[in-house]
Image (cartoon, rainbow, N blue to C red):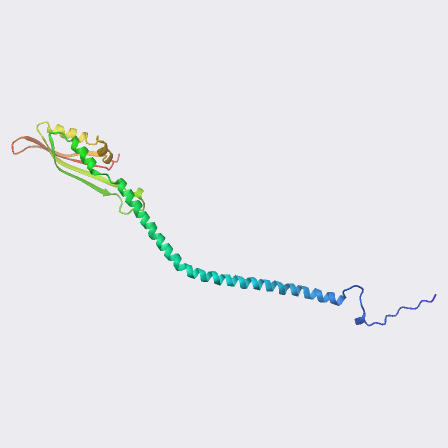
Length: 208
């Protein structure tokens, strides 16, 4: 058997490789695939950016429409809160205001028969000038009495009246102290012995 040498008569560019895809095609695919992915990725990013920009503009337009309404709402809410606060303050004020008719009724019942009251005044003074809530309402009450006690024992009646002044329920609730201010002995037009006196009471508690 005679063996002949194998001679390749094809040029390099005419050579074919076994398989369904040539080497040149593989190189082209390897080059194009990343480029295509980049293009696809850039396209997705651009679509997302365009969508985000559109939504941003839309939301901005909505906000510009809602902003004036929001300002009106906040203003109305502030006024409503202010009105509610005023109502609460009025309620708190009503709670701390003591009906003086009860105090005067108790005072009338406890005055001895030999004592006559010539002048009586009750004042209320707020401890603060501004209030943010009802619990801040604090009021001091002050009472002043001027009168006379008749007879030699009138002075003793005045002292007893002053000592028992805070015993009635309502008076004792409003006032914390009751002091004898002044007392002087004299005679009236009929030359009867009288004792002129003054008593002061206050809701303020004395510091110890």
